Image (cartoon, rainbow, N blue to C red; front, side, top):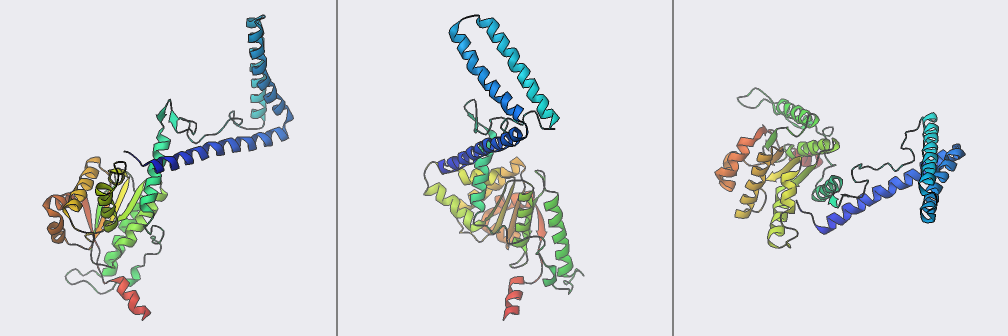
Length: 330
């Protein structure tokens, strides 16, 4: 997957900052050790001097082999003494080395001229964050979901009240977020407006992000508009970037499906994203106010068959909570 040049530069800055931080932290550790043990500082100075002395011996060409062997023995003895000091003070052997976050590239972003996975992961995270920037990810949590707004009156023909129904939906979503992994099911949140679909979608997103997974939460109007702009108005560099992120992330949450501008391009993009994620076996959550028949009229049989086939349907019931809250304020 390609990334824009500004994402690459931002990711490089992040990696460079990690390397600088590792150097700063090493200097702090050195100062602490040398203040407590001056002998350790002297050993480090002597080891540095050995390299200078070795250079002089090579240039002089006098008894080079025997002189270098003596220096090597001296160096090994000093290193062993320093190891003994670190062990005595219960410090790791690499205490006087940089502790890089990535051992493969030593926080340079490249291994033998090839981009390291840490730089790729950083670019991916930056791109995810940019897509999620306009999403209210921190506004809704499981703790703030209140089933008290749902009626206790039984639904006709079911004997079960909206409150009891939604309590089971809440528990399902909570367990889904808690147990989430790459093999989790894909979900279809379906029901009228103001029933908590967006709230529980956001709660799942926040919980899964905290577990370290790459999550993209987008509304259908925003993301399909962005995809169209990249395809038809953006430069070559931008094409396919967002769609690649949508198909590659660990969890895609597509909110308010059906409220976007309808076009052949929208339907095609929808199918490509769902089909690719299905083939990759990546979890997807879609929320919509539409019925299955409504979706079939808008997106066609091919798209809807994918939705029905790959997503477990979770029905949301009750009265519009947003309307209830507005009436209370009046």
